[in-house]
Length: 94
Image 1 (cartoon, rainbow, N blue to C red):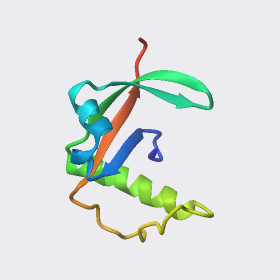
Image 2 (tube, rainbow, N blue to C red; image 1 turned 60 degrees about the vertical axis):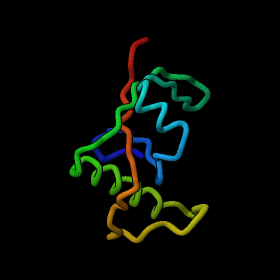
Image 3 (cartoon, rainbow, N blue to C red; image 1 turned 90 degrees about the vertical axis):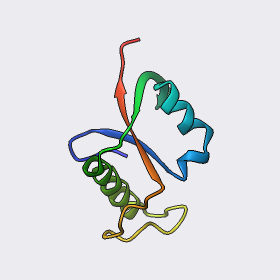
Image 4 (spheres, one colour; image 1 turned 90 degrees about the horizontal axis):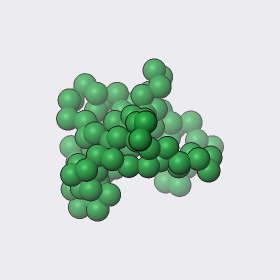
């Protein structure tokens, strides 16, 4: 998801049980493919509640704008779940 200011986030529920999120916490280096181009990125787990709320808000807004979401999006005023993790994505040069 991306915020109105352009900050990019990757997020998931129950991240503690997922391989990719645990690898991201351990290493932080990744690659993001966008329109066929691969970009080197750094991912950092967000722990600050205010920033988590920004990422959650961006997610809710995006899902509620989709014409045909894969599942029912959360309502616009839905609170952020406790088991929801978010990672800040930043471009790196190498």
